Image (cartoon, rainbow, N blue to C red):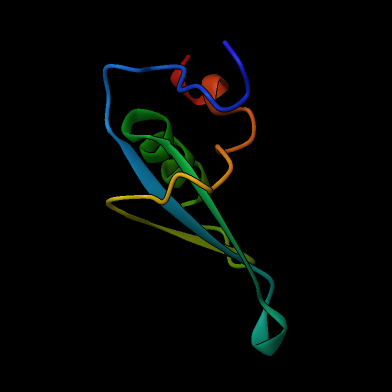
Length: 74
């Protein structure tokens, strides 16, 4: 598996948008990930005040995969 291959090719990919920071100095990161890994990633962020994330469909092919995506499938 290369870095750009899904660890779960039978699942659809979604776009994961992550906002990091507090106040006006937020930085947004965009990734693509399989649905299960993206959902687990969002659950992990629940309750954090310095980060928030959202999922949406149809990620563009030029987005990098979520770092360590396969670990969210364990």
